[in-house]
Image 1 (cartoon, rainbow, N blue to C red):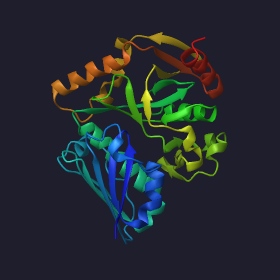
Image 2: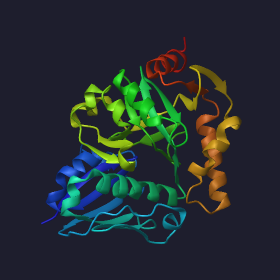
Image 3: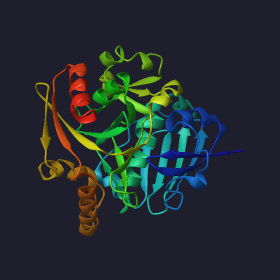
Image 4: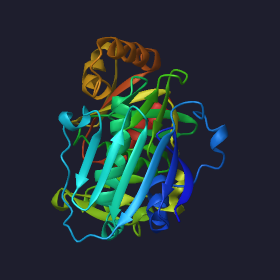
Length: 315
C-alpha cells in the first residue's frame, strides 16, 4: 500500500503518493515533511502531485537528454533507462518510476529526476521563473549569489555555510510572482562540490555523495544533522554576482547585469508578454537593492570575508 506525504520544494507544496520503499529517498530529497500543508504560504497556489512507484529492472542507468526540446514538450518525459518520469506541466502532476537499484543512486533519483522535474515545472509556468543563483543568510540579511555554470556558486555558498551562514540554495532560486517583491525560494538539500573541496567541509564529511561528470564533482546530500544551518525562503537584501580575478568587490547597477540573467528567467517561456512581466517583476525585486560584483581568487576565506564585510555587515 502506498504512503502519502507532504513536502515543500522551491516553495511549492508537494503531495507525494509513494511506495514505502522510497521513504529514505524522499527524506534525502525534500528534507522534513510539511507539518501543516493547509497553512503553507502557497497552499492556495499550484500543488505538485508526485506519485512514485518502484520496479525491478536490470536495465543500465543512462543520463536522459537535457535540452530545450525536452523542456518544451507538452508532456515531458525523463527517461534514464530503468527509471522514468512523466511530467504534465499544465496539471502540475508527475508520475515517477524508480528502479529498485536506483534508490541507492542519488544521481539518478536526484540530479536526473527530481531536480530536473521541479526545474521543468518552474520553467514551463507563466507565474514562476528560475534564477541561476544560490542564497545565503547571515545575521538576518539575505543575498542571492549569481553566476554562470562553473563560476563557483556551489563552492562559495557551501563554504559560507561552513563559516556560519545559513544555506538557502546553491544553484537555482525560484521566484513566485504572487509573492512580495524580493522573495525567492531555494533548494538546500544537495550541493555539488569538487572532491578536493570536501576535505574542507567537516559538516559534510559523512554525507552521502555520488560522483558526477566523471568524478569532477560530487552530488552531496546535506545530512539531517546540518538542516538547522539551512532554509528555503530568501527575502533578498542584496545580490552578489560572481566573477574571477583578484579579491575585490564593487557595486553594479541592475541594468548592467540583467542581460546575464535573461537565459535563466526566460527558459521555457515563449510568450513575449510573459517574459516582459517577468522582467518587470525582477526589476521590482532587485533593482532597488544593492548589487555587488565579486571578483574572487581561489582563496575562499578571503572572498567570504570580503562579502561578509561589504554585503552582510555593511562596514
